[in-house]
Every structure is written in structure tokens, then in C-alpha cells.
Image: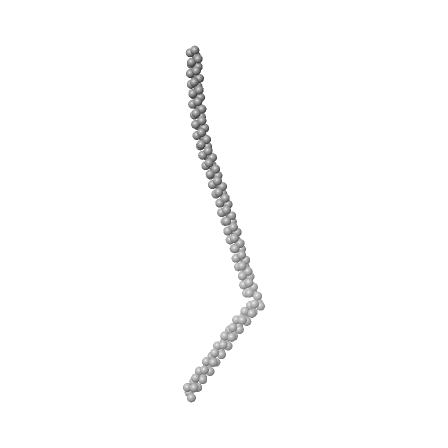
Length: 137
């Protein structure tokens, strides 16, 4: 019978030890589950932030590309206008018909100006002569 008691005590000790081990394992598993859940939440949050940052970066890149395209387009338009103005200026400089017209207009304006001065001078001289004639008589 002594053997039966010692067997029961050993069985109870083994049972308590197994219960203790089970509780320790369960506590560890629960703690690990909470820790892993926290890590998963953080990973999800970080993944969302990275996705949002990538989206905003893509939008910023699209805006930058549009601005660059617009700048290049405006620069090309300005260069074309400059080129056209240069061609027109060169054409006016070397076109003999236009150059002749410009010379004729310049000569006429000088001639008109000289004639106007002569007419004004004649009028002034006549007015002076008339004034002298009135005071002399």
C-alpha cells in the first residue's frame, strides 16, 4: 500500500507540474499573441503610410513633369517667335524694294521739312518787312 500512496503523490505532483507548465505556456502564448498582434498593427500602419507617401510622390512627379512640359513648350514658342522676328528683320534689311521705299519715305520727310522751313522763313521775312514798312512811313 505504501507503494500506492507514493504513486498517487507522484501522480499528483506530475499533474500539478503539468498544470504549471500548461499555465506557463498559455501565459507565454497569450503574451506572444499580443506582441505579434501589435507588430501586425504597426506593420499595417507603416505599409499604409508608405503607400500614401508613394501616391503623393507620384502626384508630385506628375505635377513636376507637367510644369517642365509647359516650360519647354513656352520656350519653344518664344524661340519660334524670335526666329520669325529675326527673319522679318533680315528680310527688311536685304529686300531692295522695301529698302528703296524706306529711303524714299525718309527723303520725302526731309524734303517736306526743308520746304516747310523755307515757307516759314519766307512768311517771317514778309511779316518783318511789313512791320518795318509801317513804322518807316
